[in-house]
Amino acid sequence: MRHRLMLTMLATLLVAPVAEAEVKLLKHDQFDDNLGLAVAQINGKSLSVQPVFAQGEAFGMVFKLSPGEYPVSILGLQLVMAAPPNDTNLKTHMAIEFYYDGSEGPVPDKAEPDWVIDTTDLFDPNTGATGVSIQGGMGIQIDFDTSDPANHPPAISSGNLWIVMRYILPTNDLQDQWGTLTCMKNLDMNICGCQNTGLLLDEATTPNAGVINYYTAGCGGTQAWTWLSSLGVNGDPILRVKVDTAGVCTPDCTGKDCGTDGCGGDCGDCTGNDTCVNGVCTGPCVPDCTQKECGNDGCNGSCGQCGVGQACKNGKCEDCTPDCTGMQCGSDGCDGTCGNCAAGETCQAGQCVGPSPDVEVLDVSPDSGYNDVETPVSIVGKGFKAGLTAKLGAQDLGSIQVTGDALVEAVVPAGMAAGTYMLVVVNSDQTTGFLGDAFEVKDRPAVITDDGPGPTDEGPGCGDACAEPAPDEAAATGGDCSQGPSPSHGALVLLFALLAAGLLARRRPV
Image (cartoon, rainbow, N blue to C red):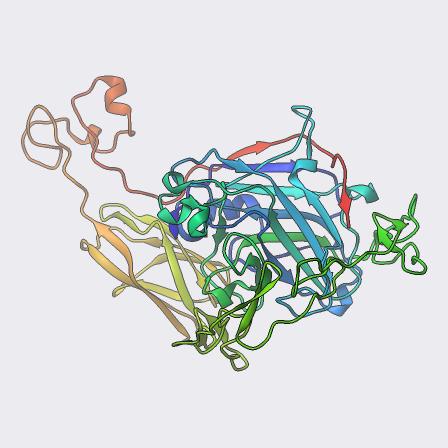
């Protein structure tokens, strides 16, 4: 699905002072590091949305750090999700999981996360209530209280960092809110419905970055990890993590016999068959394969493997016919694969796709303007370099500013003929990107008055004074001029709702 986004608010859920000397933002989306500016760039864009997630399913991002950056302290998160277009007030709660993982993915090398917290655990001191909901159409920032080891994830000393957002509430029948029958809930037909907030994706796909943990059978049963791109989902979730690579961390094993010390170390090992649960050594895990012939035994073991032509569904091996018709890669529908892509390629919708061109133009915002005025525009893409030139058709754009390799600010000059134009950008090294039908130049409609010809005619009328009233100026003043349609600027005014400093009510380590 693609929706025209209208982000209206930035909410800081938790605020705590942190040392900024070695702060680094890990992200794969192409929007500004500053969340407020990123929301402003997203406002009004048409981006891909995935609203269909059953209870227990999750999406996330994998971040890879260089060896010289360890140990790494996690300071906070930034997140932007999508709201149903027909009910933007819907909210939900989610679990936020942290995996410190040595694997390259998409499957984590452990069954449980290293640290997890629910949004139900967050505390808002303004209201005195526990639980801060996730709402689509908002830029959400969560800053952990690094002064208290109980209120932040432990430091990571090696491997990759996985940030995973898991839906913990049931789906609803939201076909009217999302505007699609895909969000109808009908369990007899294995249609799950939709969540109150959807996954929002940017305009480019980073290979081996976005992951999903989903039910292979639809609304429940066996879960599997895979790359988002392997399911044909294009774009990256706007999910970032703020870290401190200075390696400053104070180990704390107060009240713990085992488990993490909060800084990548441990507080001890359990003996015999005991296992560590929440820092306490408890009795051994007892595998349970009752009425199961395959799948997980509850202790990270297996209850058995299914044979050729079968797949494990709800603990039972069922006949399954692999189907790779027209596919070069991806799942065959029976826990197998249709093939692997060559180095440098990614699997998208079952096809191996080569690397993207050096320069891509993905979007222009706004995408239209009137030809009697200049129109500032933002060009979003990848591979932009200082010194580039940009043209709409044969017309050069003015005031070009390259603010990053993914964003260019420019001005469409006045005086262009009405029509829809292709945008072409050319770097100084002659690498080129283009976007067809990128911008529409419009003739401004004549202003119609009750007294006769509009201001552009020779006859009597309101004159130039009424040529550019504010949208509600004529109604407010009782004048005779009616305002023609205003050009869409693509971005809305960004409002900030900053909550006061807050603490986690409790953490939930695994």
